[in-house]
Image (cartoon, rainbow, N blue to C red; front, side):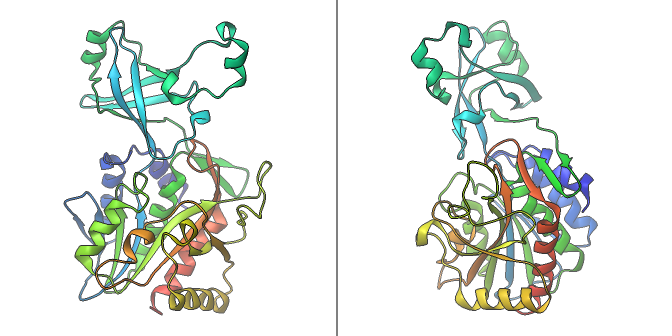
Length: 342
């Protein structure tokens, strides 16, 4: 694995609708690999060698969950909304970066000190509506001078790191892991195959960017590369999330209990046959909750055969995701072999 690249992808700023930071990395890396690059009207990054009718589209979403400023009070404190599915428990006392027109402004998420909480408050969950961001401003005027305004997006300055010999941890592994896989595929991309870094997946049941890109491209088939919940740690059961780290990428048969994409049966068969033929580990998953970009594409126009291939990841939708290097590399390997069969 290229840890330097994976680190840059993980640490890049890219809350939904503000994906410019991660998009710049994707564009540069695609070009380094000799691909033609386009950015559509919705911010999706498209890369290819040559395309014709009904291409194979392989996509990974660039955006990450985060926050957005909704009010700045007279003392310069910021109230916010959540962008995407963030667990309130992961927000308390976090360091943050506020994206402004003047650059990134550091801050912290503050809350009432436990010393002055009533007993029932200590027992309860601190909801995000009771939290605020402190950027060190003396008042609203000083906050404005820093560039703070309503609509600023907010992300987290978590540093990417290696865990042990075979694991990695960082923010936004959902879905910067998928972005990394696309860049691996870009090294030897066949004709009529398009790699797409999509936008605004985290803020819709069915991703917005993928739908727009696919309407234009009219794919012959679509593969979403994403992450899935690993159930191999304390407080989880494999019966609830039957994916384990180091056991290979997961072939997702159905999303959002069937209300999202139900994987095309022919693609499922081809993917499994390809994995077995090349002795690549894989797992099988069904999503009861959650969906990938495949859910936004499968019913476009006359219908698009779609499937998701996901890397098991612990603690997704937090600032400290954990994934296994072998699963990422096997996901790339499987897709490289699979492309030629579709």
